[in-house]
Length: 468
Image (cartoon, rainbow, N blue to C red; front, side):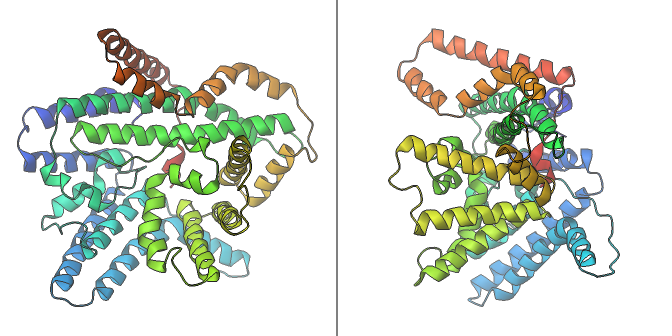
């Protein structure tokens, strides 16, 4: 079930809110059990069998948490339960996400393995990392162990962040499971945030997806340089508005129920370096790898450059692998590893004028998204070659057609990717007025009406991160 679907907007969400706030108001245990049941229903709606995988993950990590807590309180080593938790969670992820890819690769190298047809449970990378975060944060003393498996289930399966994040570390919401406070201010703020995310997804990402999909579907010789650039730019903005829009909706939904999730995006396309970009893009994933992989390896506080480069390599190798079982994701992760090493040790970009730094960063990110989007390394090479004019016409009628039909969407996507809205909010909140409040409310209603009309018409509504 998509947040950007009529079923969710007009049936599921209203019913959940009504039950949560009317018969269950001031009954925290009942609210938590109800939210868990609603979350499992939300997941089972499109994945009826895979909800059993989710329940197994909840029960297993509940047990691992108790095991770790008991060992920690006794002053004993937690190495065995931590290794068991890592093996169980990563093993589950491997079977569903990577086993087929590994066997297929071995067969190409001369093996003769039977390759099973395994469907990928939606959001398995997200909820697996959250489950592992629970055990690790209990071990680090960053959150109290839960004696009630239903509360572990709510943390792992809570529907706003279940299938596409943000990846909420247990320490962030450990106390909120029982001690959160719902207010009308938070509820209104959550509604506004949800509507902004819905607008990003439906009015921008979905429209840009049409151009990007058309460009990336063309074979060698069919793609002009101009259309290749247009397609890559559309995908660059599509993935941002698709994913940040979904994160906005998740954060807004959480706030409606009294949960406060951390931000996941901070205008990444204004970055002046790759390092800054990854402080602004998918912040929850970067924080997860930083806290549970990079820092335990020693981070940048190691006694040699070689060890620091090794730490960066491990993190970016795993970041690429996390995104999917394809060589393109591995190459995408290692491409960022190379860029970061060049920034840190070759000082690439330092001392350049700020506009040139921003342009360089945006171009590198754009090239990286081509790797990310392409079906194979060969397809990525051909697409990048077309962008550079290798064996491709300069421009064609297809480019002119799609540019003419989508120029306003592209301009809007460019405008909203910079923090002008944040500046405007600061100005307006500094000088509150009834007229501005009414105007903002009308704007939100118009945004919802526009997004709803697109959904009711059944326009193209893909979601990139369902693949992860």
